Length: 167
Image (cartoon, rainbow, N blue to C red):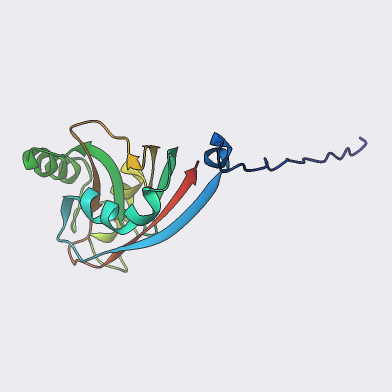
């Protein structure tokens, strides 16, 4: 089989201060947001994340925000932002479907009896979110919020890398 090569080239538009072209030049921004230690459970962290990224976020008219949690025993999800019972009920559900303790069938117990269940719960929700950006704001529904779900018994700080891309 013969290898083929190709070249991708892009022309950067000439920016005229009186034109709309300057808003069509793609841009990127990235920041790592540190979240304080939170007790086991699901926590609404939207305001903390937005506060940290707002100076960059406000410069985007249209784009995507990618959030990546750098941990394997916690997770990110988008869900109800109003009624805290939803967060409590979600934690109750997770604890019922993922067994924990000495009767659980897990081999990985070196880091404690809550560690393997935390890994499973993290995989269920995942560690990444993508949210549209519209006019300098995260474009979520009225009742949507970003949750950090802490799956370990002993709180630890968590890091979320937020990457913004758009125009």
